[in-house]
Structures are given as structure tokens and as C-alpha cells.
Picture 1: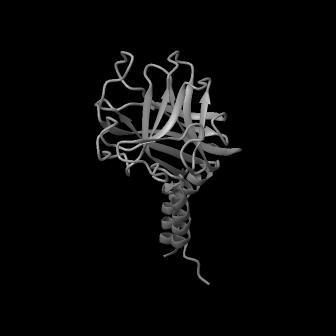
Picture 2: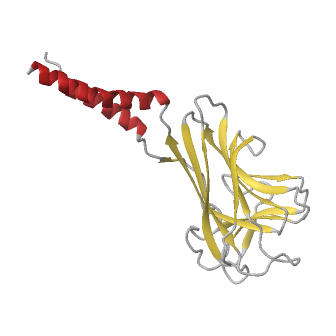
Picture 3: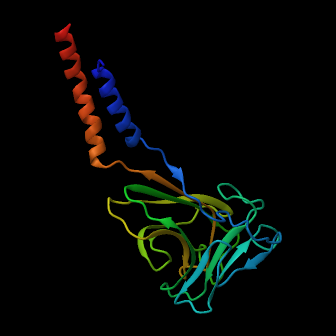
Length: 242
């Protein structure tokens, strides 16, 4: 059987390029927009200490001076009704911490499964800014804290974290944090949202999304580059034979 060298090189390149250009896939986040529990319009549902359905609540050093809950826009809370994009659905998460010394956190987390090697994880969460004036003379509502954590709960190793607060009142904005794993990983991946108890009290969150994108190992790039270098060589040899 005659072997077509062009086809051989092309197949090698195709295989390498398929891995090198792998697309992101969505990781399942349970109750991603906090709609699993009913909340009356303009009302709230306190979920302290357990957190919303599908999530686990935590309080670090806060004692009873914090709470976790779900809100739904209406007359009671100064959040635009309906929720503006990129928020999603009717409900949103709020986290409160009232101590004010800047060393304590209240939040929720979700274990999304085993951490995968050579993968870029991108966590995107809509963070809201209430439309009314914060209490206690604070200039703004609290920025939300979002994190990727290597572990089954909030006590694991923080891989990446950021804070965010939209610049205008009564608005929502996507904030993103990413981390790329190496060739060796262990344990689970958890996603986390939190509020720090300074400078203000409340942070709002909604529409949690997590993507995973495979990252090729160096050997894959070497395969592609090697295939590219073979193309002119094969062409010259075929020309010589003819």
C-alpha cells in the first residue's frame, strides 16, 4: 500500500491542532442563580448558617454578627426590579457581616469536583451594587470576594481570588478570576463567594458560571511544530522523485 506522506503529515498536524485549540466547556454549578428556593417579591429568605440549596455557608470569626440570605427585588430592598443583566432569574444572594474590623468573612462555597491537570478554570460571577445608601456612614456597599479554591471547602488553598463592585448604583457587573493547573494536581476544586466585614456590610451575587479549558502540554506544541517543519521537506523529496 502506498503511503501518502502529505496525508501522514496532515493527520499529525490535525491531531496536534485539535488538542492545541481545545474549547472551553462549562462545569456544572448547582443552583447557579439561586432560584431553587422561593422568595416573595420584595422579600428575603435567611439561609444562615447552611447557605442556599446546593451551597454550604461559612463564617470565619464572625460569630452571630453575620448572615446569609436570598433576596428578590421589590419594594423592600433597593435592588432594581427585575434583576438587570448579567444577573439572572428572580433571586440573588446577599452576604452580610457586621463586625467592621476588617478581619472576618462570611460566605458560601460549592465543591464542583476533582481538580484536573493542565486546565484553565475561569470563574465568572455577577456582583451587584444596591441603589440605596449604606448604613453607618459608609460611602459604598461592600465589594464581593470571589475565589477558586483547591479543596472540598473554604479552608482549602486559594488558587486565585478577586474583589468587585460595580461603579454605579442599582447595577450588576461580571467579575472574573482564572487559574491554570499544572501537570500534577490533587484534591477537589471549590468555588467561593464571600464578604469581608469592612468597609461596609453587604455584598450581592448572582449568575455563577465556571468554564474549564484544557491546556496542551509542551509535547503537543512540539508535535505541531515538528509537523510544520516536515511539510517543505516532504515537498522537496517528492519533487526529487518526480
